Length: 171
Image (cartoon, rainbow, N blue to C red; front, top):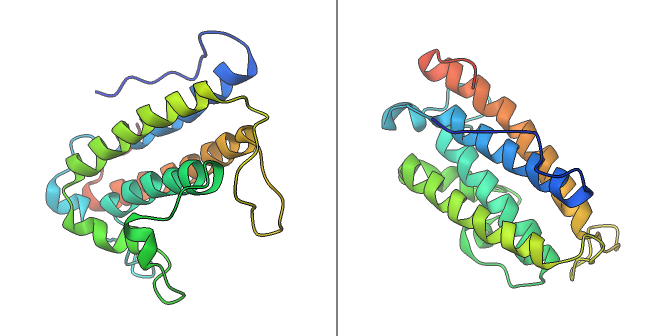
């Protein structure tokens, strides 16, 4: 069972931000525990055919990649996001049903560990190499806050999808 805490080891800003991001990540993992391979690929919402447990975990992984590696570090785009189009804006969700959920969760955790190191190696006031759509360069603090919001919002989606596919609630 995934252990989670929203209580930081210290009360400085960095510890609080990192703790809440990890709490949101751990909550996503907890919502996937014990689900069958078949249920992890089900899209129970007729108007959202990409919203599967696999798709949501993949999306969380690639959203973090986008903000930390592409936007903050300025690296080049790789992976399924290179296939995004106006007609298929979330290829990481579409292709995720072909990847076992345990593999997606393991990749998400490995990546989370890398990003914990990245955050510890940079000042929160460090600015992103790439600008956001309005031309401004956000700082690392904003990226972390954005990912807390994004992950927490998708945890609600995970909760709904999980209840619809196998009845499990909570986590």
